[in-house]
Structures are given as structure tokens and as C-alpha cells.
Length: 347
Image (tube, rainbow, N blue to C red; front, side, top):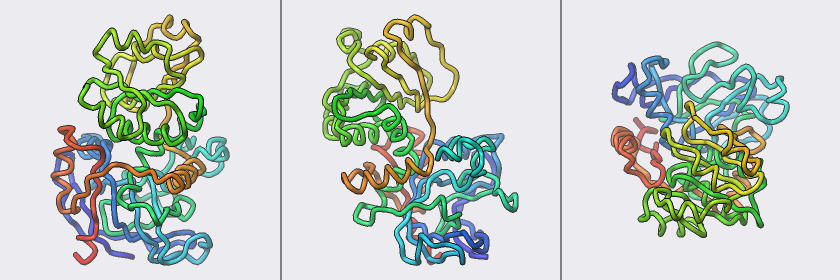
């Protein structure tokens, strides 16, 4: 067994404390990764306070690092390779979703990077707020070595969450993409849609974010609380990615869609109420998506490497993980916290 230092909570709402924990001995198809950076996701915050969650819990599911050991059957990775891992570390591999390269929708439910069930020994997975991780080779991705590793880490969760719908609905030259909310998901949606060649509009409640939206690649900003501005924007988008994580009215964003447009809800995954006429007029669609399959994750990393796309991050030493979580809860981040795990490798 490989021993690493990890930040672990023993009960809902409990503090994360550095703890020595073990990673499994390598199976033939395993890769051992020395974790250098791990993004801090809103879902980590939710998991740490979930009274129905599985504890003890080590969060962290968007991380990068370097290969330190490979199993006997591994052929695609070697010691020293720069790699990245997302929020899925296994799936059944046989259902129609897995066969379609959509392991994120595995009918048997994918094994999550933390709080999941290992498909072979039944143990609970522990995440990457840690010095190292052991993962099945199919779920490891080659990382563009020329990109800032801290900026790559959030691509494995926030990035792929917006990338799949951008690809699915054909964002590119001649298409008009709207992005609702300029946070962890939204800022990457703007960057990636712009890099694809789409015309990008940001919908925000704050006029002060217009400058940041333009810097990220947006061509236009619309203040969503301004009824006149929203009226002027009606029919102006082919695809809208709604990245707001809280309950809100979808009707205004259905109205900014053009004929046959799609509103893809990515941020808030709870119940919504929609008037059928808001869909009927213009033959519009309401859709959603979550995470990403292996094919699209590789596609994203290759695209990011070619176009130099990374997340805007604030990097903190992993010892300040409590600070990162408190500030994330307060919305005090632009646009993603990333933990530097170098301070645990010799702990």
C-alpha cells in the first residue's frame, strides 16, 4: 500500500485535517499519480456538509500531476508523464452509454473520484486533496505540458461540463452562444466558446462584470435584471449555457433563444418550472448535461493545448484549504481556487 497525506473530514461540517491514508497496491491497469494541483469545486463544499454523505471524506476530483508508477499492463503512460484526472475513475464499460464514450452516464453509475464505490473491492474512493492518487489507466489523460498545471486542473470538471454541450450543439463560427453566470463554469464557457469561434454573449446580474467578460472573450454583455436590455436580446442566441448554481427563472433565457435554439441548464440541477409556450414559440429546447465522457475530455485537453485555454485560478497552499472553502462559500473567488499540494509531499 502507498501512504500519502490527505485532507480528510470525519463528519458532515467537520474541518478538513491532514491525515495519513493509504492508496491501494497497483493493479495491472493502474497508474499512480503524484498530485501537484487540485481544483476546489462547489460540489466539494456540498459533499462536506451533506448529512447523508459518506465519511470519512477526502474531497477533490479535478487534479493534475505526474506519473510515478504504472501497473504491469499499462502501455499508454510512463513514469514522469504529465497527466490529469477528472471526477470519474471507472465505469462498467459495457452499457450503451459506456459504449458510446459517455462513461459519465454509465447505467450502473460511474465510480466517482471520491465518495464512490470501487468496482473491484467495494471500498470507498478518497479524493485528490492529497499527495497522491491511484487510478485505472483508462481514466487518466495526457496533460498538455506547456500549459500552467494549476490552470488545467479545473478543465477536468468545470471545463468538461461546459465543453460537452458546446460540442454537442455545434458551437463555432456562425453560431451565437449565450452564457448565464460568470463563475467557475461560466468563465470557462466564455473562453472555450470564443476559442471555438462563436459569438459570445454573457448574461450577468452585475454590470461591473462587463469588463471581465470582454477580457475572457465575450463580444457582448447583457445585464439580466435590465428588462429593456433583455428585451433587446430576445432571439439573439442559438445556444445558451446556464451556469447559475442557484434556483432562478429560466423564462428570460428561453426568450433570448432564436428559432430551434437550446437552453442547456448546467448550474442548478434541482426542480424547475417552465411554461410550455416559452418552448413552443420558436420550437425551443431545454436540455442539460453533466461532466463528460473520456472521448470529450481528451478532445477538450487537446483543444486547450492548441489554443492555450486554461482556467483563471487563485492558487493556495493546500494547508489553506479551509480558507479556500470559506471564501468559495461566500462567492469570493475569480474564478476557481486550486490547491498546491507540494506542501504535503514531505509531510
